[in-house]
Length: 227
Image (tube, rainbow, N blue to C red; front, side):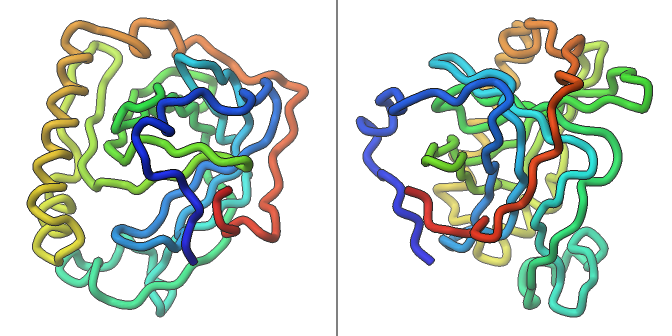
């Protein structure tokens, strides 16, 4: 499947035809690395959408598409040496545990996720390094870049999944040029952390979802081409 996404930087910088309103349901999707096939799809509720930020809420119990190994083994339980080379398939499961607030600034090669424990005790931020989000009528698409950063409430931080990042390179999923760009993106994200720039300084850890919001459904055509 080929996603109909505008590849030109000048067009990507244009404002969208319209911004989504709070409470609207859209899809937050990831393509397979080096592939146009969608292998992760999460229906989410729009919290805020404007020229500065897209914020969405992934509610507990949301039906999501995620990859698994062809024999049904969860990807994270497959040994790292074979995790990216053995066949996979996709399954639909409800999002388990607490919800996740996802924040993305247009053009940034990462998104920032907020996690809470039960009772809304804030746990951490998570910087997910990825391709800058590409909007389409039904949501946003990206490609995950394996390397991540975990940020704690005391503002300390640490790199995450460096082993997966190295394995993806060894298995040919990340050419050297792309890996270098991802490392540079990570350093840029760390620079934002060190000066405590947005969105970390913006108080999102005190945000709460509108109790009237419903859990989004997974549409039958969740993997349709992006237009």
